[in-house]
Length: 175
Image (cartoon, rainbow, N blue to C red; front, side, top):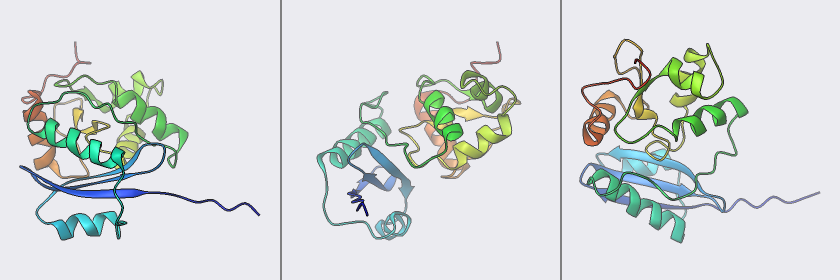
């Protein structure tokens, strides 16, 4: 019988937007907790974070802080999308290609991912995105210009779009 050892490290950090958290595996980042009012809220979402901190978790925290202060537009840390379905992985990988400051509709993202007609399923895949900001699901909106949904709440989604200059909305796939 094979023994599988899962090594994960985490870090909690404070930004101008609030407390955030990151969990890293040996392959990449597996979870990002969006800004919260308190350290306890982040701990609860991380589910008992471990005490050790990896270089990758520290680097990711630094890059997220830079992004939230408008000093970074692109992330260079790896993400670990291993535990999700193939469909969701295709959607999240296509989402990572949406440029900073641009938005696209759910159906437009489904098309880019080679999943024509799967706009609703695309929304469900994005709702389960374990690494928001790194996989910028906040850049995906409804075709009619409404914000749609966001796991961190619509206020955070709007703030992230404003930060990037993508609000008010211009849909890249509407032309």
